Length: 144
Image (tube, rainbow, N blue to C red; front, top):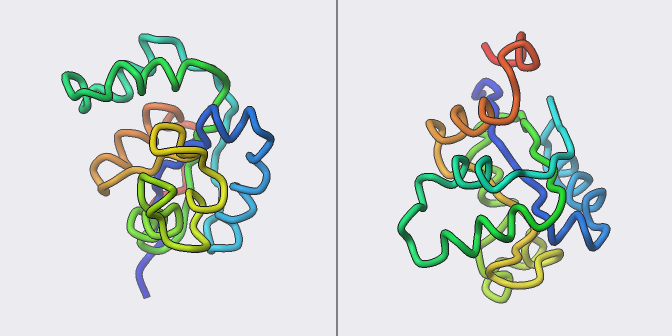
């Protein structure tokens, strides 16, 4: 059996504003994730820009940054075996119209741009993204 790993999930401003945060977190817990750290934050433009730096220059970057600063969001350090791959499966495709039935985006997202949740797409990005929001002290003892 694989050892548990951490990944980052963020309940985005659209889901927070529409009162779906609890449903999203419950969905994640039912899928076997343990929330090891979480914090409701309102990102500044500089923070959102730094977080999504890998997308700078892409057509959707400016709109994504504006959206992520439009209201509070809930970053979470999520733990389970093969966390990155499992979270990507549980959230579903970027476009909720095309997401698999029963996935978070199919159930709770409004549109491709307002798609309820962010999830790290690789182990390397998960490590970077978890550290973006949570200090080593907050994460002490959570990873082997």
